Image 1 (cartoon, rainbow, N blue to C red):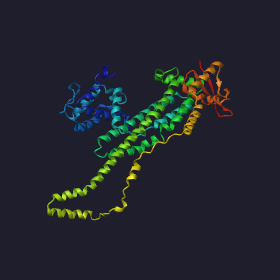
Image 2: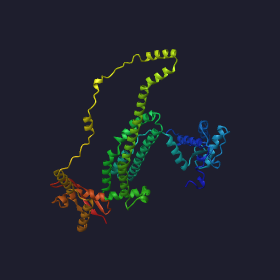
Image 3: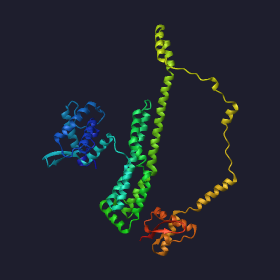
Image 4: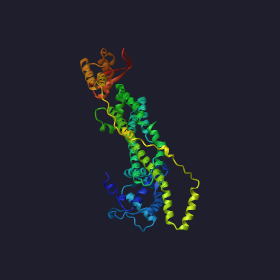
Length: 474
């Protein structure tokens, strides 16, 4: 797509000798057109474009180190002996010729104005984002995903579901970006280990107070995980008419989902994808963030401790250095140096430890400390007790596959929906099967089996809870 006639040489300015000037100009253009302080009331004319880029070119040319190894055929026309106005005009021509800028008619002012092309805007945003330090609090997308799902339950609006999917994707993006941030801090820490990196450490402490502390507490993925699970289950258990309504809306406003989905239902695929993303964030990315932060803290603490020890060692070596300097001086200079040194250390107090406080351990005590304790022998009664504990735990464990197979066979035998309250509950196996049935059917993700929550409650001699209806859809 970047090498069609309108973008045949799109990357040519970035491969020229003066690419640093061009990147600075693209950064300034994006700040003017789409940045936080962008002026949307006035379009960018030729004169305002030149006035905007002229100081950027002037400043960039002073600090620019041109790359003489760049191929000459990729360089746009910008001679080193030209003045700033000519250089600015050359930059504008290069951006327009290679598909970064385009002209359009300003009907209000009846003049030609400039704007980014679609490809130019995407790459300019990348340059602008790299140089701009993020100031917003991360991980608010978890809370936004939860709120969007809550709105979808209240309003039955497919737009809220699409928003929840977008926020869920950004959860992974935010966590990955923070992991990369800590890995970059560790790399810089190792490169600058000779000099204690106080600036980077203080920057981390400030970011931790304003951003990471909220991410690990109020905006933690683990904190909102169960609520998002419950909301997704409630959306999956919507009545058939509401389910069809949301399905039709999604097919209209999210055609991309219809193309990417696996299965026949866009709604079920979208809900499953949100759950998979949130689970991946909790089980993979969140632990990676904790580990990356821990590694950085350990490395930083080690380097700071090493710097403190080195400073302490330098102070201990001060007397040796003073003796060496005294020996190298002439007798007259030695007297003056020692008097000056004596005035400096006069307030110091010297204290000696009592030698009686030091006692050596006997040989038998040392041998006893080095002796490895023999491992205890496990008795026969302890083995029997451990076996009984394992047997009791296995006695109350049922396989989800066995539970789903039993209910599927029962549904095929009865050929009608079954309520959970009508299933037999006379033996311990039947009671455990009923208590695990709804969870097992949902975990199976079988599109033929549908579980619907009923308004009635289930009460028996063993447990109480919500009643459900299980059926096979044809």
